[in-house]
Image 1 (cartoon, one colour):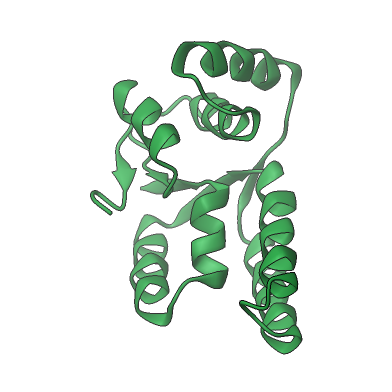
Image 2 (tube, rainbow, N blue to C red):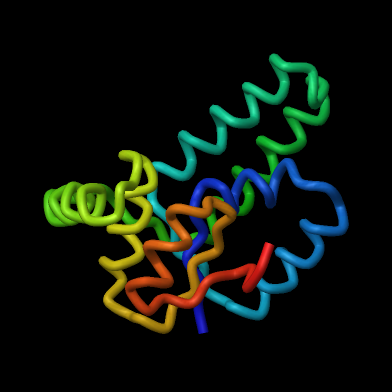
Length: 142
């Protein structure tokens, strides 16, 4: 089995409360190989910085979260934004009303060419597009 981690899942992984991140980590370990778009790195770092600026986390917590992201990133299978992914992202953005980043994430998932790979995400619109296309999602409900 494997899984596809989108940015909302990555933010949950590195900023979420301890109980929810434990469950997410357990699912990811069960899934084995985790794929994600290269865009996830940028979006996650931006979310971590925004949380620090807003005072939701302190500088030490921010630095620890970045370190955990860096360590995890080395274990992920990275999907690059190729021309084919970009074109598919444009198509799914129109078809499902997705924002640009979510469209890139969904096109990256589709680019894996495996309909059984679960999308690990908390974004409702992205999850709806994935489910409408036959992809399972984690968490099943949220």
